[in-house]
Structure formats: structure tokens, C-alpha cells
Image 1: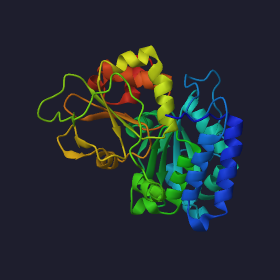
Image 2: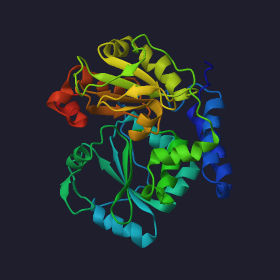
Image 3: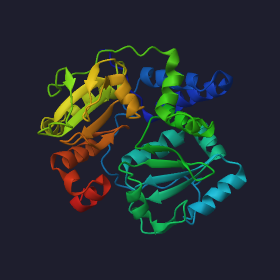
Image 4: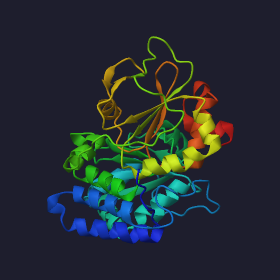
Length: 362
């Protein structure tokens, strides 16, 4: 499989900005030229590192929020009223950590693009929450709890996590983890244009990409992947080990990076070998019997799960219940922690991954 070249942050900023700005002038055509153009630029431009290849170990120096983030008293009811009074679309609650490398990518790469910043500031207010914070928050329903309690309740397993509230206080969209600029921009427009009222984000993206033909392509192989047929039913007979399902697609740079970098790490590879692993092309009609016993196809199952990003890695327990999913950009440190959570059976004693990390000292 041909490998795409990689981007430095500087080249990434200028390349993406050029793509976004050009397509913004053509909004009468729709947002999808933006997605395809930005995606093409990301895949083609030469460089040393990119949005999929950064060091995700905790930062040495704490992050600072952009100065245009809202200075909130953490009363989200009041913040939502202000959004409505200003004529903006939505309130975004940002859940982050001061030393989170993925949060830095959002701040420096996505919010390093003038187009994204301008669009975000015009349509949203962003209130930052420290997932370990102890300050009191009043949520949109009037419940008072600490920042940490709020983050735990909303299962913000991976930072940055963003919850988009519409003017009525309903959740329009959740994003858990870091996404590249073109996916992030699509999420913003999905909320602003009101499509969340009629369709899922995954359907929105698929509909927008209808100009492309998603033919099953060559996928990266691993020795620990199980061969078909994919009879994954655990509802009648529990499995002996947790199950991992990799949803991928052909011509996927992020998938290539996953296989050539984190999965090449011996410690990570050994942990996956302690699990049952299946790889599916998320656009294929490959027959699958799901862990809960349903007959379907890989494509339909991915749709039912609401997956919109590849690669997505979904973990199931011995009885076929989903434990956790990693469906955003993932690197060594985060993937290793998730695998430790699964292989140590931490999910049996604490189904909340974020709380398990605290008790485990990770």
C-alpha cells in the first residue's frame, strides 16, 4: 500500500488554512469540498510529523486556554442564556487537562487555523472544564457538582472532550478525543446548520462524502487478527477473552500510522495478543454476527455503532457488552492505558475508565 507523506505543524496550518479558506468562498456548493480538499492536502503535503504522529505523553508544561475562551463562573444555565442573547448557535463545554497532548493539538493545530477560530467564535461560546478540577459547576439542568464530578458523569474518557448544547439545552453533539481539522470543522457546521436535529453525525459525513465511492480496499494486516468468518456472538456462549474490533478503511493515512507506529511497539502488540482481535473494513458488506448475536454487515454495524472516524477500536467484554471505544486520534500512551484497563480487567471493578485511571495512578 502506498504511504502518504507527513506534515509539520507549520505546513499543516498553512495547507489546511488554504484549503478551508478556498472552500469557504464556495459554500454555496456545500461543505464537502472543504473536507475532501483538506483531506487531500493533509495526505499530499511533505513533512516530518502530522496530526496522527505526535508524542502523546503528558506535557511537561501546562497548557493555557486561548484568550477567547469564555471567562465563565461555571453556571452553564447563564452561559446558555448569553449564547441565545448573542444570537449564537451553541454552547460548547470543553473538558480538558492541563498536561494533555491531545488538548494541545486541538489548541495549536485546529485553533491555530484562522478559519476555524473565526467560525467558532462567530457561532459558539466555549466554556472550559478541568476534568480534575474542584470548582463547582451548575449544569444546564441546574444541578450543582464539581468539575471532576461533571466530567465523570459525562464519561469524558478521552480529552479533549466537547459537548455541544443547543439553545434549548439539548446535547447536539459529543466529541470524545482529538480529531483532525477537517473532521472538526465538519462537526462545527453539523451543529450550526442544524443537521443534528434530523440525522447522526456519521450519517451526515457519509452523505457528504457520497461523491466518493467507498470500495473495500487493502487493509494493514496484523498477526493477531482473526480470520473470517466473523461469528462474534457472545450472547449465548461467553468468550474466554475480551474482544477487540478494529473498524478501518482502505487508503486511510490514520490507519497506516496506527499500524506502523503504535502497533509496532512490542508492549502494545503483546497486550493485543492477550485479546481476541478482529479487523473489519467499515465500508464493506462483509457478513458479521455481532457480539449480541445479530446478523449484519461490517458497513451496517459501523453505522449502527455511530462510527464516523477510522480507525475506530471497539472493546467488548466476554458477554458481548461494549466496554469502551477509541474512535479518535490515538497514540502510544493513550492506547497502552486503555489496553491495561482491558487486560487487567479493570472494567469489572470500575466501569468508568476515567475513574479507574485515578485509582490506578495512571
